[in-house]
Image (cartoon, rainbow, N blue to C red; front, side, top):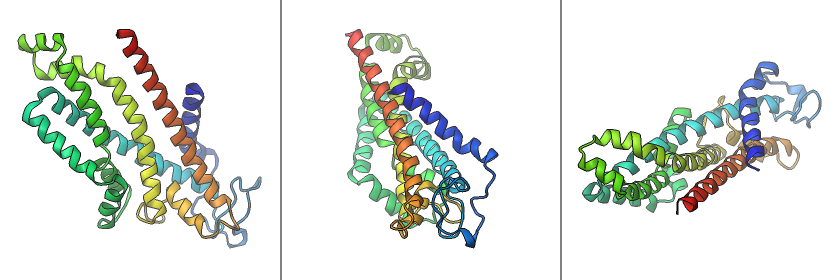
Length: 266
């Protein structure tokens, strides 16, 4: 399942960026004579209420959703990594302060926190990336903090500290390689979560603004005519499902591999 998920993820993700080179139909072109056409050879995924090609719009929206998801997950993961290592390595009051901040953020349901932030800001891709990053770093930081705390108590780390090896060298040379599996696992989940968060906000009309589009906004466009034009909501929803399913499968595989290594060490 891991290989299948990885290959499917690569094919779909690259397809969003490569396919428009060959499929040159504009996602913005209006055609009043082709309103709400069902999928056909001419229009692979049909047309919408304004006669625009759904396949072209799914490709365009996919680029937006994937870019927002990847960048938001990257920023939040690195933020969580830095905060988690800082708390686990330095301990003491620094750890207590960071733990309190994490707990305060976790007190609020993440999606409602997203809604609250986006409601007062005019949303665009950059704003969504920043908002999703701000609300998505806590899980990574807790996992990294826990592992960093355990690593800092290892005998070889204590020896390095006694030998006055610089903190930067200890963190980069010894902590980073050991924390990499946890980072990758959390990052995979983070990308899936960021894509779902963006899609949810756009579906509610709080995400990207027209003429920009994403899979979430395409889902929202199709809900009004879902009874007579099922394809408008089906194909964007299918893309969201495929990407998130593949990312979760990859994350589960990495988690299982990490667990096996831990068992072998013990």
